[in-house]
Image (cartoon, rainbow, N blue to C red; front, side, top):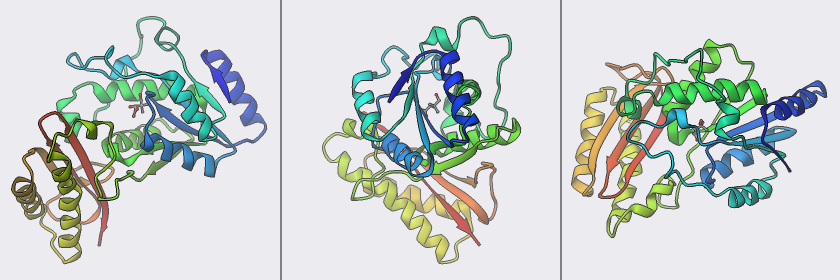
Length: 282
Ligand code: PAF
């Protein structure tokens, strides 16, 4: 496995692979790798001849109230995880390498960002889009792997790839779950006492919604109301949002039809959990 820190060397290596017709599977991350990342690397390994992982804590996607310096970092651990997953290249640039001077062009994501978590993180997806445009140009992957736990990010990347004509196949990868259905997250350790047991009610409420839709319910307000009541009755958590949109467009729907996302965020005392399901409604 090769660790590369400069853009010039990364581009040189990737151009060489491309000239040899080697497919490149790419997993962009901010490091501190967890099981979600491992499922992305595993999938990339299955589907490509070369696998690239990038580790870069992108300052542009942190808001004024989000602590960039407090973001967890552990390169040695990430290095061993990547090695165990059969990664071929780690791109590990510094902030100075990625952003050597003030930008002369700014990227602004104008759609798919004013709902769900994007609503409370203005500018976040502009930072994500900016770094991904750079990373896509540096790595030039055949396929790029993103976790559906952050389905809004996947929707934004879908728009980015299509609008800017990147010749990249976007591969959304299913959320990794605990045995009881709770979506795996580094935040689960902050669940206190009974909250861990209650947290499973998020995925249960999504399954209730799925069953209701399979039973013929097409009114999104009724589904949201049912889920809201389920969470309020079975947990001490406070619902931040439960929303339903078309996917990946993230447009409101009066009647459920086509590909949809049901997404939720619930605040417990020290952890804010998110979860979602994506369904095809006939
Ligand atoms: O999902 C993340 O870790 C980041 O948003 C990404 C895609 C690596 C861009 O910085």
